[in-house]
Length: 247
Image (cartoon, rainbow, N blue to C red; front, top):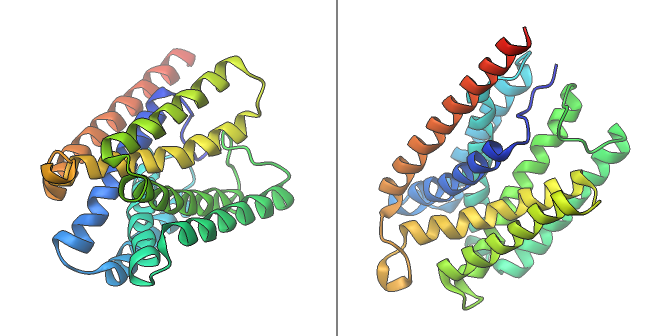
C-alpha cells in the first residue's frame, strides 16, 4: 500500500506551510526560547526520529502522521543548518555544498538500491527510509540556501522569497509544458520550497527595520500551524469523498 501523499496542488501548499512553520518553529526553539542551535538540533532531530519511527511502523497512509514527519524534518533542518553555518562557522556556501553532496549521494544510493526514485508509490520500508532521508537533507539544504539569499545576497527577505518563487513558477511550467523527468522536477521543486519557506518565514518573523513583518516566531508559528491543520483536514476529507465515489 502506498504510504505517501499524492502529489497535487494541495500537497505543495501544505509543503510550503510546513516548511515555513519549520523555519519559525526552529527559530522559536533556538532563539526566542534561547535554547541554542546545538541543543535545539538535538531536540528536534529526536522528534524527527520518533515521528519517522511511527511513520515507518504504520501499515497505511496517515495524513496527520505523514505531515508531522514533514514538519519535523523542516524544524530539524532549520536548526541543523543554523548549527553548521553559525555554531560551527562553516558559512552558507560551505554548508550548502556539504548538504548538496549528501543529498546527491542519498539519491544515487536510492537509485542503485531500488532502481527507481519514484515519489508517487512508496511501498517498502527501505524505499521509505531513503525518501525521508532525502527529504531531511533537502529541507536542511533549503534552509541554508534561503538564509544565504536573505542575509548575503542583498535581496532581503521579500526579494529572496520572490526569486525562489519565480524558480518554482518555472518548475510548474516545466511540469506542464516540457518532457523533463517528473521525478527530477519533483526533487528540484521540493528543495526550492524549503528556501521559499525559509525566506518567507524570516519575512514574517523579523523586525520591520530588517525588512520583515515583525509577527514574531510565536505568532507566525501559531498562524501557520492552524493553516496547515486546516489544509490537512481538507485534503483528508477530499480523499474520503473520492474513495466513496470509487466504491
